[in-house]
Image (cartoon, rainbow, N blue to C red; front, side, top):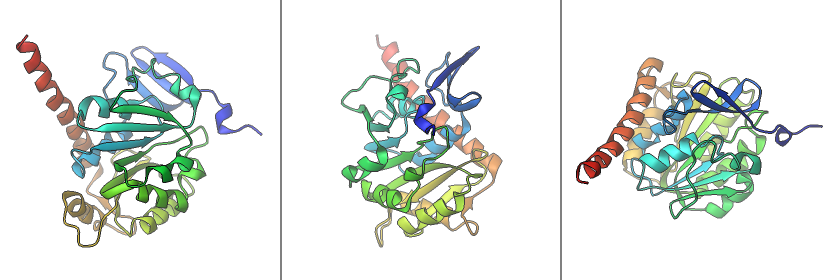
Length: 263
């Protein structure tokens, strides 16, 4: 019986866009060839809302490379952060040059590994954990189990944040949310309508009595709505994601302009 890894990654160029697909027409990642660092897809911009909670994370761990949109965006626009990407498939990693993903360095590394098996080795090392490990069959069960979410919580430092991308039409959607709430003691929420069928869920590793920026914001997000909290309205949240991404890009461009003017 064919498995998800039997579907080789497909590259498609359509005018100024390059896409990565595991099945024809099912876009996993998309790059603007005129601006390779731009986040084209709404869900990727939504995941960057983690900077509301953690504006200067020292270490970002990502599960799933895909076309590297989030990895190269964080590498370029969060220069204070070290980035580790866990990717199961060697054939996906082999496409890194096609998607202008930076080479490995002191602050950027792609690790060819099974993230579910490797997560316990990361205990207490991540400030932000981004989960986006989809294959042709959707989100693999190993990346949505109660055991995996517990390992993710342990991988975070105190006050750390997990951000996961889940499809709202996944039959296990409610089960996954319940598992996240159990693993993170209920400190879980989402921004409503921010990325269509992609639900971006935030979970905070909060210590008892902790008073931090992330804890205060998570209380607001987690208190809004029932049974699965979500803050605000879709159009506002989509504008918020654009504002955050554009702000990071502009902040990085100003020092570059200053350097060029001084040459």
